[in-house]
Each structure stands twice: as structure tokens, then as C-alpha cells.
Length: 551
Image (cartoon, rainbow, N blue to C red):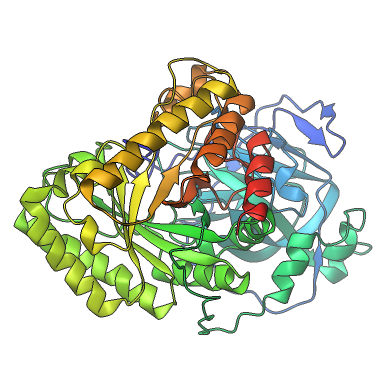
């Protein structure tokens, strides 16, 4: 794929101390409740703290929220979750609130009556607020600051403070981890001293109307990972095996070790997925830079990768580790200008992940992705040096992920165990073409690949390291299209599903084709309707049916 990056440079916003009254409250039943239109004012308190000091231990009661309101919602067509202010108060990590893309966004909780609060737990999505404040109010008009926090790192914030008796609590984001995002929260929980909140139910009982634990939750409890444990591989990937894969993508340091990620991996295992490609991204500034580096906000940590690999292996699936290099200025990685210095740094980068792959029993290592300018004959010696070094560290099979217009110029296929292709081949020039035309287009492309294998002398199996179509009309014409251009497009689950089914119908009959990895699935289940993910769409049923019947 030429460009798939939708994430820009992480920029911390300036602290904006803005307090906005709750304009609308929404009850659990979803009905709007009139709000007090009077202006509010905040009472200033001491400067922000970085770490919350633990309060004396006391028995806490869970404080159920009766209604909620927000400053605004994310309206991005492909990413926005359902606009529900109560989403962070439903005891579900499958729903979330995502704000508008500006400073000062807030969410306000209404307990329905005054309650004594001493602890707030916030479970952030990757779009977190590094600085935020918690306010309290008796009347939804005049607000007092409870606490101001700065230099936070997302994840789960457990914030304890001196008890305050109040009906309303508001969380106001004062900065954003990425200036191009809003803020987003999976769950918020409020607690207070049990003796000051008589009659409040424990957390589990407060949601007794919620159905019993889901199959995903029960399965997660069965996976008993011991700290420091490395789960054995369920077995090697062999050449006769059809790889039934998906690319599991995250641009966040710790997302892959979250509960939500575990649930999503369990979900994938139940679809019949056999292999999961885990992406790890380093960054370089531009095409002419010689240095790639770990981004503390966006690069998946080794700990998170290790956790995800352990979960995948526990579920009986296998792993392709697929390190990427992306450019900060969002130019395509295929345009990187190589040099001896660049290869020196790239070798260090890929050896790090080769060592990680060896440590965690990874079954397949991808040594590069779409690095078109670096893989032709001019740089063959440098690639052979990289491959030799990797082989000393990692004993499993190797693959390179060539771009769809690069595969016939890669100079080192003979050194690979598989020929990998990010197969975003254009199929037709029509929107929503009949399935018969898509089948014909795939047959034509398969014939081209087959002839290339014969004439090049490469007696290697081909695996599509990436293949995908977004969920819009015309997706077959330019499968590599850049995600932000989708806003004006028309949703078409049928075209996406037909492209996928045509792929299965044609390629599974070619003996040299040994599988593919769909681009893409996310740890988050709530991605909108227009992107590449198949989750909850027509194409997912096709994927699952074919995966379960293969091998």
C-alpha cells in the first residue's frame, strides 16, 4: 500500500483552562433532559500534579451514574463511535465516548443526587488527555476544581482525592496527545466511602441487568498467563500450509496489552484466523533521513508485543512479526532514499525485532515492508548482509512484503522462504462491478503472477502479506487509497465482500498461493463503517467461512 498512515506528528496542546456548562444531559434511556443555562465559574486550586498521592485505605462503594452529557462528539466518518454520552458508564469495553477535535472537550456525569466521591477511574483509548481537570458541582452551574493533573500517559488513570460531596462531576481535557485527534474514553468509574454512600450497590450488582459474562470474557479468564512466561508456539508455519491471516494494527505504545486487545484477539480466533501479523513501527523524518527511531507514543512497546504474542499462541494461532518504517512527513516509505548509513541503521532496527521474534517463538518474520527504492539490484549486497545477520539471530522462515508494483524488481527473493506481496492490485475501473468481473480480474492477475514465477525461476510460495479493500464504492479501483479521502465516499459492504470472495475463489485454486493477511483489524471493535476492517460486516462472514474450510 502506498500510504496508509492517518496519524500525524504527536503534538501536545497548550493547557486551556476552560469550563463549559453541561449543555445537555442524556438519561440511560437516551432521553434529553433540560440543563440549567446559567453560566458557570470554576474555583481555582493549586497547580497541577503529575502523580496522585494515595489516600488512606477505606472501603469504597461504586457510585452509579444516572445520566451524562458531553461537549461534543467525534464526527469522523470512518473512526467515530456511536454518539452516546453514557458509553463510558455501561461497564463495557466495547463502547466509548470520542470528543470533537478541539481543546477543552469535556464529559459530565450526573449521579441523580448528591454523593460523596473520593476516587475516579478513567480508562483512556489511545487518544488521551495528557493534562485534564476534574470538577464538581451541586447545581450543574457553578464548578469547583477537585484536582488538576498534568503529564499523564493515558492507559488507566486511578485518581484518588479528598472526599467531595456533589451531584455532578466533570472531566475536562486541557491538552490532547495528538493535535489531530480529540480525546476518547472507554470507561469511567466513580467511587466513594461506603459509610458516606449508604445503599450503593457493588460494581457487579450495579450492572446486574447486564447479561452475564460474554464468551470473550470467559475465554480471557481461561488464559492464565504468568508474569514473565513465554507461551510455546502451537507449531511452525510450513510451505504446505495456507496462511489464514489478518494484520492486527496499533499505533499506540501499550494498546496491545490491554483487555480490549485480548478480547479482539479471542474474537479473531473464533473467526478461524490462523495467523496474526503484528506490526511494529519505527519512524524516520523524511525520505532522505538515514535514521529510524522508536516513538514513545506511537511505537508498540516490546512488552506489549510480547503480551500479544503470548495471547495469540495461547489461542492456538501463529504470528508473523512485521516491522515497518514510516515517515513523519507522511511520504510513502516506498520513496525512502537508501544509503550505506541507512542500511546500517536498518540492520540494527530489524535485528532488534529478529531477537524479539526468537525470544517469543514467532513463527514468521517479515524483514521489510514496501521499501521499493531499497530492494533493487543496486542494494542487493546490503540486503544480503542484513539477511545473513538476521539468520544468525532468528531460525524461523523469512518473508519480505513487496509493494504490489515492486515484487518483480526485488533482488533477494532467493534468500527468502516466501515471496510476500502487499497485493493492492487495481481490479476494474468500475464502482460495484459484478462479481464475475472481479473474478475475471483476479484470474488475469493470477496468470501474470504465475508467468512471472515461471520466467523468473523463483520456486517459492507467494503469500499476500497485505490485501484489503475499504468499505466504499470503487474500492477495487484503487485499493491503496488514503483513508482521509473516504469522507465523501458511499459505503459499499457488497463491493468489499465481493472483492474478498473473488480472491478466495481464484487464488485458492493456484498451488503456488499459500495464503494472505487481510488489512486490517484493530484492537478496538468500534471502528466506523468505511475502512478496511471487516469486523461486523458482510465480508467477515465470507472470511470466516473460507478460513474454516481451508486446511
